[in-house]
Length: 329
Image 1 (cartoon, rainbow, N blue to C red):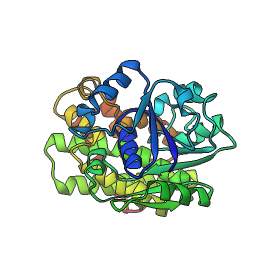
Image 2 (cartoon, one colour):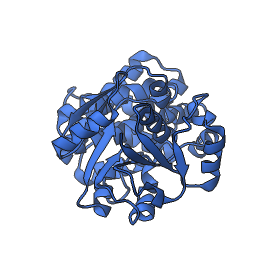
Image 3 (cartoon, helix red, strand yellow):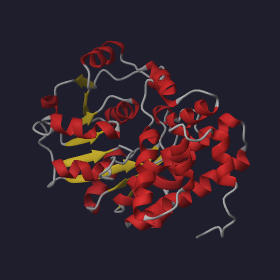
Image 4 (cartoon, rainbow, N blue to C red):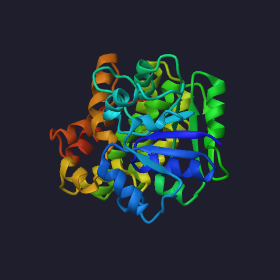
């Protein structure tokens, strides 16, 4: 059995901690704040994020990075915009060269994916990315789920695959790290658009079209950035996109829905007390697309809505009134 450290005590970090504990591994989860550590220690649940699921007593919560020194694997499960802060905090404490990111986002200005940022701090480490359609509450209920792990080192991808694989959490592997991280990040932006459609009362016809056109935007971006288009058609792309656009628990979809119902994004996030990665990612991907010269109209419309430049109805009209085109261009 392995000693595993998880950096981040949000819903996904705790979910993976529970899954790994049930496999017999020893888990320590690093919290950012003392009050969060105390709350999780005492209550052994996070009702706001995970409902009534009980957190096993075997999981140790800490705010001291040095307590992760004996970890054979370390999982980064923090909001993308806080990753560098956590890396600076834990860099001197980690002794392992086996690092795993479950973060979905792209850094502003540098346009680096989480694994690339981690590699800056740990250049000699093996790094893997675990991603795919995986709503925490469903995984905790052991509803069958399939995800993918990506690493440039195939043997490490297989090693991480076996670390997480269970009879309800099926893990595939690939070497296309770039494709997996782009799909994971951009699908959150498309999910905000899906929520907008829900808030406007549109139906399955509209959302089906959005998912396909959104997937095409991710593929175009991936192709330009050196990813394999097949990856975008898989679990980390279309699979995650479908789940995030339809799930009632999807934070990004909820943000879009509430904005269409008249709230602003700051108000929605304050009520959720959770991070919706698609908000920041929309700004980053719009800038990236402009820099490399590709059109991403759905991303541009989401950015416009979030910036107050477009109303949801204006964004829909803008998309529908674009000049007719071939389906694939």
